[in-house]
Amino acid sequence: MTTTDLMPSASRVGLSQAFTDAMTITWRNIRAGLRVPDNQIYMFIQPIMFVLLFAYVFGGAIQAPGVDYTEYLMAGIFVQTMAFACAPASVGLADDMQKGLIDRFRSLPMARSAVISGRVVADLVNQFIVLVIMIVCGFIVGWTFHNGFGQFLAAIGLMMLFAFAMLWVGAYIGLSVGNPQVAASAGLIWLFPVVFMSNAFVPPSTMPSVVQAIAEWNPVSAMVAGARDLFGNQGIIDSDAWPMENPVAAALLWCLLIIAVFAPLAIRKYKAASSK
Amino acid sequence: MNAITAEGLVKTFGSGEKAVKAVGGVDLVVPEGTVVGMLGPNGAGKTTTVRMLTTLLAPDAGRAIVAGHDVVKEPQAVRSKIGLSGQYAAVDENLTGRENLWLFGRLYQLSRQQASQRAEELLEQFNLTEAADRTLKTYSGGMRRRLDLAGSLIVHPKILFLDEPTTGLDPSSRLDLWDVIRERVADGATILLTTQYLEEADALADNIVVIDHGHIIAQGTADQLKAQIGGERIEVVVRDAEALDTAEQVLNLGSGGQCVRDDHTRKLIVPTHTGSKGLIQVIRDLDEAGVAIDDIALRRPTLDDVFVKLTGRHAEEETPATEPAGRAS
Image 1 (cartoon, rainbow over the protein chains, first blue to last red):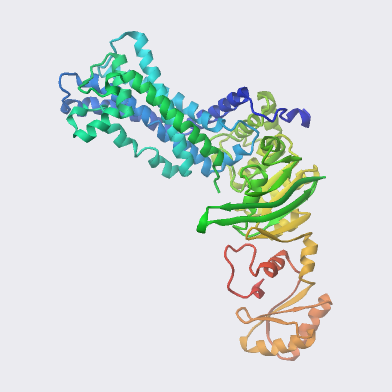
Image 2 (image 1 turned 90 degrees about the vertical axis):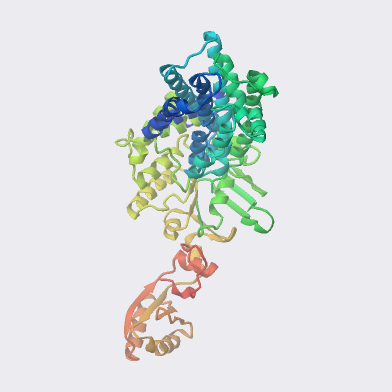
């Protein structure tokens, strides 16, 4: 092997290189992630815990008029967990930034996009595993889907798209704060009001009118209502807001909008990132 | 041929009243095959300069050519020809040594096989073969730095940027790393090394650039810089503060009034041209005058002296010293 063999020939980054680099970073993130068993356990236990808590603890107390609460609940928990995907992505990138790895990557002749897309893809794989675990848990507590396997897969696809969109939000937050401790809370804390001011756990009709209006137009509500539609689970649609009448379309539009806004923002942040 | 040329590099952080000019017009030339040591205290602008030269940061003004390519216009071409080893060991601590090197190799666009082979070679070269399959969490600080440096050598880059490569290392790891750097030099690499350690610049660099507050305030070989502050001198610490006046008179008499005094440390410094003979003379003179001596030494100028002379403070201090510069020890 001579020196010239090792020199990358092209200095322009093509699409295939962007893909290979993204896969390399994905490999790194998954590999490194597996070495931190605490993370993995936390990541998988949390959703299981949510399913069981809501189904068996709150399930008895929360009365959703005219519907079985477990039916009502599951889509909400699935979507919430997909939204929380935001946090690990922001922690991961902030950590890389603080440790100087982003600098190392930026000094390499690799595709600019790969560090973020590698993070997003790795976390998407994690989220998929989490979703599968949750669905299995759902079956165990008596939840099921009613509209056939095709629509069931469509619901899973929709939720992965939502996770994908939220990962870009997380990437943007992580690169903005640049400190894993701050990122851990900054990536998560705002999600609680966003998730709870929705139809995920209770029908918005029980909320004060202002909150109700927010809930009706909340992307999380559109996602939850969309997933319920596709699963054939009972929802309570007592709203004539457009997203509640066309939840799948609204959810898709929301996801695309979030990606369209946050993907460029995150990439711009990455380009400007300067951990001192 | 120059490996690195920079003209008027400027970088300002923040804006308005809070603006901080980290680098205020740096000119730099590093001829191929030489080692230039950029010496300065924390916050002098060393890292910012390196970040601009390695395409991590776009300069506000000025331009730089590295390995024949403009850092702003052809960053990717520059990146494929340089190696950067950072101030903080930029490696993934959850991956093994081998995995880290393989990762960097892949990102340098080597094939899987090339990347594995190169990782193997570097692990051997850096004495990390035994630790190759352990995660970096188990590595010592010195091992991490070695791996970090190995990561910057994947494509045999002709130009290496080493940003404070030994900061925070214990003395023996530092010496180990110096050996590794010297091997790169023997291989013909061009190196820009930043450091706050004067002895490091002295030990490794052909040319030294002294940087402070974003400006280059001196440059030359270590000997040239030392020559700027003159030759050898004698330093005396007297036992009793009361004897300082007498001792000063004695030394001024012998040196034509060139004695420098520091009351705080009871130290007197006087230049000499006669080496150890001058030392004996001073001891004799002080003894005759009845001055008791705690410590006396013949000293050659160090880079620290140069630094103190240029900036009024020591290189390894973060903030300007308020004590007199003569406190150098």
